[in-house]
Length: 167
Image (tube, rainbow, N blue to C red; front, top):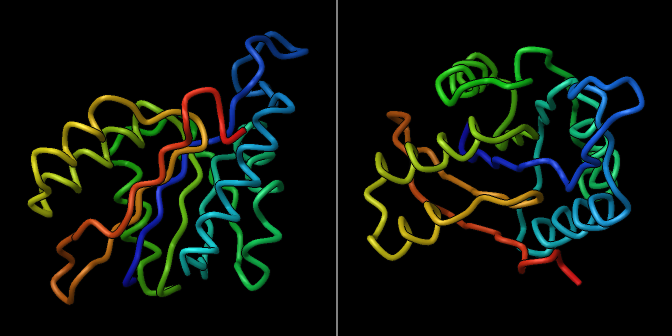
């Protein structure tokens, strides 16, 4: 693996039809923002070979919204990404590292946000970048990292939607 993209799911409804968090679906804005996040990543040249997507409804729908921007991407829905902690997400990515040059993870906070901060620290990010990343990692936000031959991360991009979405 050369590049890792961490993408938080789109904005979701507050309650699901079942009452279960796992079943919460995207709002119309969430679908739009997820699609636009995928388009922006593609415009920047970030194309995933493998997508690891939480099995929750809102992450599956996020993938569906951005999938047209990753036409050659293999997708795997992973139960273990639902409410995964940062270390669990990174472990899963490392297990799949030989299966694609660019891996996309579509998951949830707080695990994704914690992993973004961890990788920024490991990569020696500037104080300004750390402050921006600490302040928020909202729905449809993405962080991109390059990895060298020893598996060390380096910041390659942070896509934070404007407050209120990409409108």
